[in-house]
Structure formats: C-alpha cells, structure tokens
Image (cartoon, rainbow, N blue to C red; front, side, top):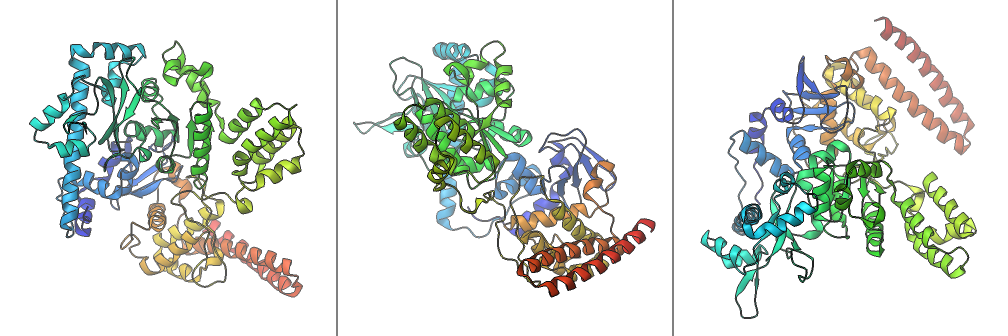
Length: 615
C-alpha cells in the first residue's frame, strides 16, 4: 500500500482531539495544563496517567506507558501506525493523501479490499443462518449444551454453514463477486468435474479475525457424527495465514493489555466460554501448535502468557515450542492444566467453574517447572533406562533456561528425584543453555551495543518489562526533562554529559538529539526509531510541572542548582565506576588520584544540596 504522505499525517494529528481519543478508554480530569486519570494499560487505584493535549502525548508515571496520539491508538486498537492514522482520519473527517502508488500495488490493494468485503459478507450470512434458520436448531442445541449463551455467540459472530452445496456461492455471485474471488478467499473449492462448491457445509462457523476485527478466514466444526475431520480451517490465502493469527484477539486485545497477561487455549469454544465467564484476556491457537509470530503478537501486549494446553505428547511439544520462540522475548510463560482431562469450556459449564478456573490461573507455575515435574512424574527412578530417557527429555527444557535460582532449583530437584550426580546433569543440559547467562532482550527493546560520542565508556541498555526502570535511569531521565523545562542551563548540562555518565545507549542518543533540538524536542523525530521517539516523548511529558501530587514522582522542578546537583550525582557514579576499574588493574597511583577527586566532588555536592534545600 502506498505510504501516507507526511502532510496528511500532520493534518490528522492537528485535527484529532487527544483528550477525546484517550477519554474513550479512561475517565480524564483536568489538572492545569494536563489531563489525568487511571491508566488504561495497568490496574491502579490512584491516577498516574497523564495526557498533554497540546503536544498530544500520554505518559503513565506508574507503568511508564508512553507515546503520542498515534501510539495510543496503536496500543489500544492493536493496529500498526498506518492503520492508526486511517482510523483517526476517518473519525475526524480528514482526507488522506498518499504518495505516488505503483499501479500493481494499487491493484493488489483493491483486490484485498474486495476479498475483505467478501469475507465480511460470508460471516454475516453464516451468523444469520445460525440465528434464524429452523435448519440450525441442532447446532443451536449443541452450542447451548456447551453452556454458550446467545450474547457471546453474537459477539464473536458464530454462525452455521448450510448443508447445501452452493448456498453461499450463489448469494455471493448475486452480489457481484466472481468465482475467482470466492476461491481466493477460501470460500469455495473446485470439484473433480471442474465446477465449484461451498468449502464449508453443515458446519458451525467461527470467524477468525485480525486485531482490528477484520475477517480473514473461518474455523468450522462438524455437526454430524460421520463428518471428518471434526475441525477444519480456511485454506491458506493471501489474507489468511493460520500461523500468524490468534482466535479472539480482536475481542481480547484491550483486556490483555489491561490484565498484563494473556491466557492461551486450544479451542474456539474454550475461548468463547472464557470470555463469557469474564476471563476476557483469553485467545486460542486453533490447535496445539504455537508459532513465533503468535508469541510476538502477545509479547507486544503483555509480560506473561499462561498456557492451558493438553499435557499429552502434542501439548508438551507445543509448550516446548512456546518456550523456544519466547526465549528471545521478555515474556514469562506459565502453565495450568484443567483437572480430569476436561476442556476449559467443560469446566466453565459446571457450577462454580469460573471460580475454579480463576484459582487455576492464580496457581499457574512456570513452564520449565511444569515440564520438569511432568517428565519426572513419568520416570522410574529404579530403572537406569527410564532415568536416561527422562534426562534426555529434560535436557532441552532446562538447557534453554538462563542461569539463576530457578534453574539451580530445578537441577537440584532433578538430581534428587533421579538420584544422579548434579555435575552429570549440569553437563548434560549445558549444551542447551544460553551463553553467558544473560537474559534475552525483549522484542523492540535495545540490545547491548557500543556507545557513540566521547567519554570512552560504552553504555549498555538492558531490556526490561514496562515499569522497571532502574533508579539510575530515572535520575538520568529526570535531568534531561529538566533540561527541556529550563533550556538555558539545560544546554550547558547537555554539553557536559558523556556516555560514561549514562546507563543506556538510548539515553545517550536522547542527549545527542536534545543538543540539536532542545527548543522543540518533538519536531523531526523519526517514528520508525521507536526507542528514541518514545524516550523524547516521555521527557517532554516529564518536563511539564504536574498539578496532581500523584504525578509528582516523575517530575523534579528545574533550576540551575538542581540540575547541577543531578549532574554531579552522575559524575560521582562515573568516578566510582572508574575507580573500581582502575583498582582491578592495580594502578594504585591513579586510583588514589581518582579517590581524591571523588572526595572533592562529594564536598561540592554537600554544599550545593544545602543551597538547593534552603533556596
């Protein structure tokens, strides 16, 4: 699709009302130049969420969610930047202009739009047939028997395909769609005689949608005992790729972001039953397989994924796959199992089932511990062959874990239960352990890299979940925010900062940006550089004096004295790191000189702190 022009993006930004947009997700109250409210991205009782309506920015001083108006729509609607611009343009009546589009791209876009409209019509047809047709009575009875109520069926658009060979095909052609389009959408198949017939017949239909709610394909369940297979999905098409989609993500997206976790189950009816029970952060994988793309979608929304998969061989394989694809992301995996081999939908249909399922969620265990216990439970400690088999199964599970207390505890548990030497076990699993014992960086977060600029130090940025900035990082960002609020002394402070003063490369890049853009920090930012853009947006929000005490934790008043004191704190930390490095080299003379410099600096800080407190 052709790129939206920069002029159009700015027109949309100007036309959109930031308070109105955010106000659809949380109640806002004016606090001076800002608006405040409860954060829509995490649970809280005291408002820590702040909106700057003039710059159209948001920031949470609790969980540190931040961004501009487009970022807010991306986060809450689960869409990309281009779609966020289009949604706001449609809402505020702004006509979008696109840069010159390749004719082939324009044709492909029109084709995708046609297929999308066709799939939407098909979903409506199936839903209406289930709701209204006397021939759908058996299907309605089956769904009612699973404990599913009409409201949740309607919300998810559940339908029924008639048993006729061409009901959908005929109606679609009457509406002007070609057979080639029906085939491309996966709605018809070609028979041996060359003719076409409906792909879904006499099956309960579950529309599969993307995060924006657009129908991409369908899952279908048999309604007759002799129908095989029991479940079928749409064929892979240019719109529908099973490995990239999570069933129910359109309904669960906001709840997932708010809960900070996602619950992953296997079946369509499991997802429906969970949402009906109020556990709306639930999505389905449409089978036991889980892909890297599906994990990536969830990792962008939450820090914890709870798996509720069968503990059979296929389920265990899916769990190990989930562990592998989550290894490079800051995502905690936990597992629950429904007792007595039931599906979640079965449990939830029982009296008190919702409370029992919530108790299972509260007691979820880490995926590694779950797998270790599962394997140890099958092993026969009295059989050397069984112990070897268990060790073979355990090696890839524990081997993928980073070094730490949890890994050590599981190794100890394996040693005791299998009666094997700890050293033997450690050597056996070491081939699967991440090198260096480092924690994998999360998607979209900075990785360790060399710093730029002068100072001779390499800032290293460690990926963390939202809301876990270190005290050092908070101090550094507070100083940069003061530089924006008081640009005259701020310019001098920025000139003195080096990478050696800072904890992360992104913070140093923010320093370099502010040196050139201190008067208007937001102008000229490249949105594709998410780290720098997010950091500068945060700093602009922090530089605005808050009227609410609940927001004061992220703000420090700017004065030349306070800024100098904050800088000296960073300088002291830099000296202390250098003293430690020199001490390891054995250069006692240099170490003594640095220690004297540090002592003088501490005296200056003491005097300056007294001035700040009395001033």
